[in-house]
Structure formats: structure tokens, C-alpha cells
Amino acid sequence: MLFVVDPHSGVPIFRQLMEQVKLAIASSRLTPGDPLPSVRSLAVPLGVNPMTISKAYNLLEREGILERRPGKPLVVADLPEDELGAQRLSALEKKLKPAAVMCLRLDIDPDEAVALLRRLIAELEESS
Image (cartoon, rainbow, N blue to C red; front, top):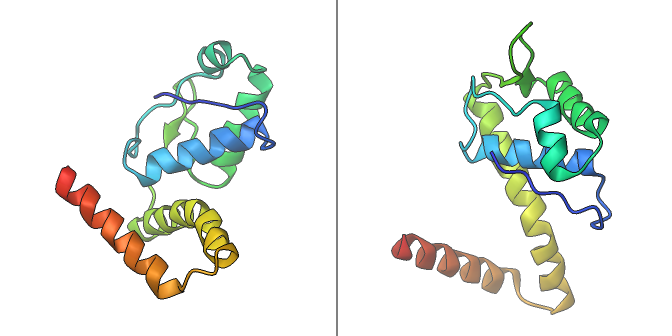
């Protein structure tokens, strides 16, 4: 599992990690029972304090997204399908919000924006 953080983004690193884990789960790159890297093994390559990783993991555990098993690595919890669907929509909403702002600023008709999104999706489906 590859995590990337940007210390200059203005978003706290623990939040960046949380969002990346949630996106990996929503996109099925991480599935129930998959282990996450240990705090130390993730902190070193990212160059961040281990407490930052621990904070992200603890918050994800509190949200029910991760599950701690004594003596074993932290794993992805078995989430109900409706919760996975909600996570997918939430991840998409976060990415589409800046596009919606751009549409308003450029005075683009919402129907035209939706049509453009549909076309882009169709092109990606054809190319894959």
C-alpha cells in the first residue's frame, strides 16, 4: 500500500492519511481483513513522526473503519455494503466539489457540466 503525503498542502498529514485509507477501502484496493503497515514502517519512508500515523490509525479505528487485534497488525474492518457505498460517494463528492465551484465561477450550465462528466466517464470506459 502506497501512501503519499504533502506537508505543504495545508491539510494535516494525519487527515491526508485517513483520506487515503478511506479512498483505498472505497475503491476496493483495501478489503476487509487486509493488514495496514505498522506505524513505524510507514513513518520512516514518509518522513513523519510515528505519532502522526498512530493518530490517523486511532481515529480510523474509532470510526469503525479499522480493527485492532491484540498482537496482530491493524486490519480493515468488515464494513456493511451500504457504508462502503456511502464512503464511495463521500470520496467522489470531495473530488467533485472543486469542479462544482469551477462551474459556478465559469458560469457553466449544470446540465452541460453533467453532460461533460458523462462523456469523460464514457471515454474512460472505452479506453479501459
